[in-house]
Image (cartoon, rainbow, N blue to C red; front, side, top):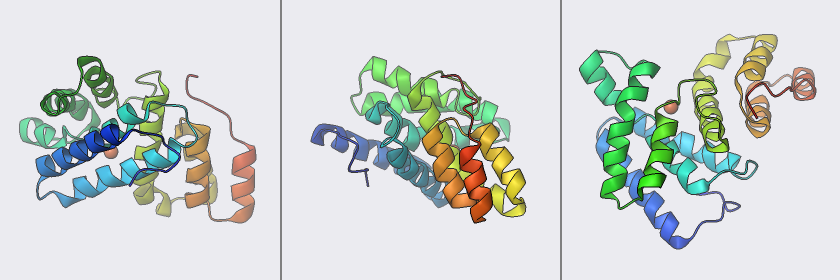
Length: 192
Ligand SMILES: [Fe+2]
């Protein structure tokens, strides 16, 4: 499940497996949300090979970033990003505390969840990896209706890390000339 280039102790891997299981049991029969979280965690693992970010915080946030979605729908009748940012952190805090996580770690994860729909929401590599991993999954739905130039513009505007931009270009820009131009034209747009 985890990228071989990401170094973690067996204790950390066991903890991450518990986080994954807690997420799966929380989402229960909502297989769509479970699959989304798992896909985001896979891209997160890939990005962690290129971006110097804390793997435990980042992968935990990958599993839990959308954990507020059911409460958003139940309380507010909406799964909009803003409600998710409000409803997600308390659920994640309780889950992680039950799993014995330390307070500072829990707050690092909660901060990412509380901002994960806000561009530049947290100025950290962990946040930028989650931002890009989420986009890599979500863009699979958006991109088929766009032409190559529109795709380039979306990626240039949206992706927060160069690795995320390159992976997204490889996946979504299939015309070889457009792909080359896209990679050459990359300009970082997020805060450093
Ligand atoms: Fe997501």
